[in-house]
Length: 205
Image: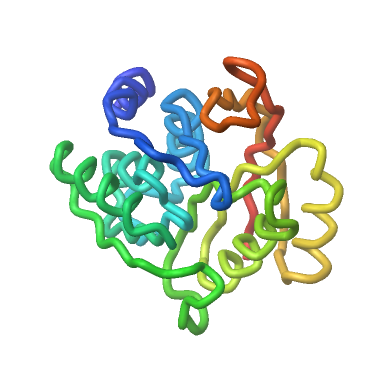
């Protein structure tokens, strides 16, 4: 599947109707999501034929993209049941099979590497400090091949140091820097749209 086709399909997905600020629910836009999963597949062969987990899947964009690019099995995990309803509908609309699990990432009872690849757009940790690192820590425990994740560019040194020193990652590489468009979703947003610089990371567990 060509990148533009993938982006177009993701652009039709339903997004949060009533996003929860405490969960930092921001949709992963089709531009970023398509490039993230396309890169994982075409540069590293980490999607097609693989078992992929979408951590904090929200409306299921990354999981759906993984399925469209040939993942053998996709699991979407989120703490918010309303998001999972939207994600399930999105998967149904595009006729892709995804297993959804309602769980806090911290409470996952997973032992050892159970999936090939984890893809995620975790909370940036602006509302609850350290939540981004909780996601990364768990992802590196369950992935056997790679973890793809988005993190604010301002946290780059901290992310790299912690992944390598504390979480046992063999490598931590920024593949590219992207502009994450944050729409005016919440009352405290003063502008219609804000650009946040984010890094697309690839970690090898």
